[in-house]
Amino acid sequence: MQPQPPPRRRIRQRRFAGLSVVTALTLAVSTSAGTGNLTALPTTAGPVNLAGSSALLPCMIRGGPAVQMTEGLPTPPGYSRSTGTVRALTLMVDFPDAPGQGSAMDRFHEFFPQTQEWFRTASYGRLDYRPETPVTTWLRMPKRFRTYGIERGAPFDPGYRTLVQDIVATADPTVDFRDYDLLNVLVTPNAGPSALDTVLSVTFAGNDDAPVADGVRIANASFVYSRQDDGSGSYSRTGYRVLPHENGHTFGLPDLYTQDGGGAVGHWDIMSEDWGADNDLLGWHKWKLGWLDGGQVGCAAARGSVEYSLSPLYRAGGGKLVLVPITARTTYALEVRAQGGNDEVVCRPGVLIYKVDATVDTGRGPVTVYDSHRNSGGCTRSPNVHTELSDAPFTPGETFKDPRHGIAIQVVTMDPEGNCRVRISRG
Image 1 (tube, rainbow, N blue to C red):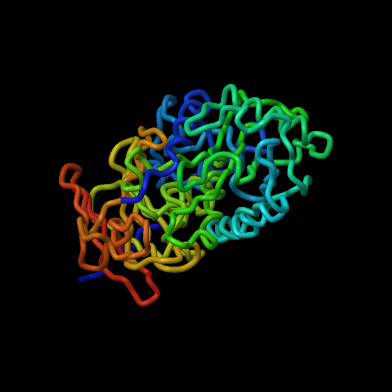
Image 2: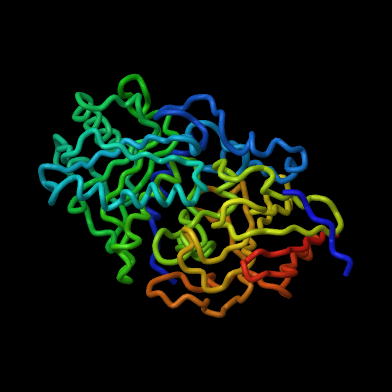
């Protein structure tokens, strides 16, 4: 997106068990969006192609090799592709000591078609997510669930490795694993504790040490147990969101919550909290995944004053993201959030301002949203929702300042359709 000339005048702790697992894994394998099939192939899609303009290069912050699931660009290879047709092998699994209750396809429909519709909306149609179920009955594992030793924080070895091997052995007569880009394992909900007690759902992404099936590595696999239930009564409407969150990891996106919960980002990205209000993805993530064109992204790297026009993130087309680089590894990001699409509840539309830090590991707070009304308690009143950041967006007349780096971001106007004009000044 090109700049325009100036005019003349607390929530309970989230899925931190998953973090410990993914953290242990991604020390060796952290890589991301734009590969093919279940194993890593050379990347051909993603933000490198979209950000080919030299004007955007100063805003392409980079992470170090030791950063786990870095927010940096470009996203390295190893994860599932995030544009075009993605075939998600989806298997419903039960155990001798936890037999599936009801139909396996009932379990499937707890997540679909909602998940594919969520991805279609979030990607502006650029991700054609296709869940496929070649086995329509419960896939019975040969061992009792407790035998695998799966609990909160369980590492990949030995329990999950054994489980994947058993899934492959049981499904292989029917399933050709070469046909799929990622694996979803929908575990019968009576295996393990309720999500109200602890969260077992986890993803192993970019795992180049995973078992091989039909000549491909099961490198990107999401395991979903009890659906995420926040106790607010929205379970039937929002419980499925645990799956797009977990699949976000297969595309290379990190966890945005921390050990303290979702206070850094609130509900402004599904990789922070996947229930309650405002569960689209941040514009930065949409750019990383190849869902925004380079022409929809502005880079305010030069000294002086420049203005941009932004349209609401949920709406296809138009300017969507402005980046204000701080260092080679950190940047501010601006986008307009308003009610629509996957942003089902936005109680204060405006310009969301946040910092992206490519040096921070997944689950350690790589993104920080700035609150325009600190300590207000927010404007969302849904039960068990992190409300403080719900009124974070800046509106006309409000300015975000970083005196240390000589940066000021002012919201100049916002029209009735939610389009905003912002002015960025650098000293």
